Length: 133
Image 1: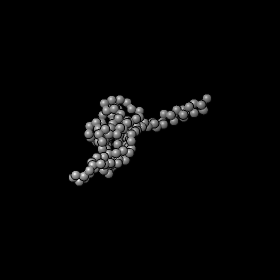
Image 2: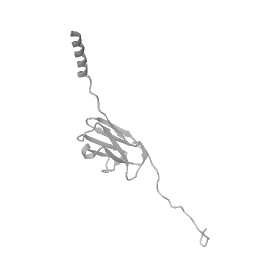
Image 3: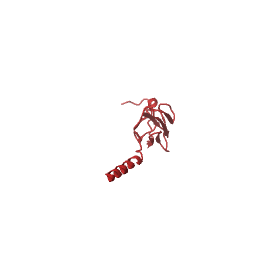
Image 4: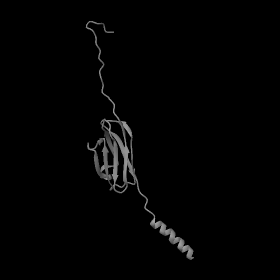
C-alpha cells in the first residue's frame, strides 16, 4: 500500500510541476504578390483568440487599407481577425507581424514583385492621302 502511495505522489508531483503548454497565434495569407493596387491582400490570424484579447499589427514595406498606416492595434472585438495590406513597390523587406500579449508573436515574410500595368496607345503614322485598308 505504501509503494502505491509513493507512486501516486510522484506522478502527481510531475503533473503539478510540468511546464504549461504554450499557446500560439499564426498569420495566413499570400506570401508572394504584386505591389500596389487598391484592395490589398487579405491576411487572417488564428489561434486560441478571445474577443477581449489585444493585438497589434505591424507592416514593413506596406500599409493597412483600414487606416493607411503601418500599425493597427486594438481588441479582437473591435479590430477583428483580418486585415488588408497594400504592399509598396521597390526592394527591401516586406513583412507582416502580429503581437499578442497572451499568445506571443507571429510574422510572415512576403515576396513582392513590381509590375508595370500602364496602358500605352500604339503609335500609328499614316501619310496624308494614304489609303486606309
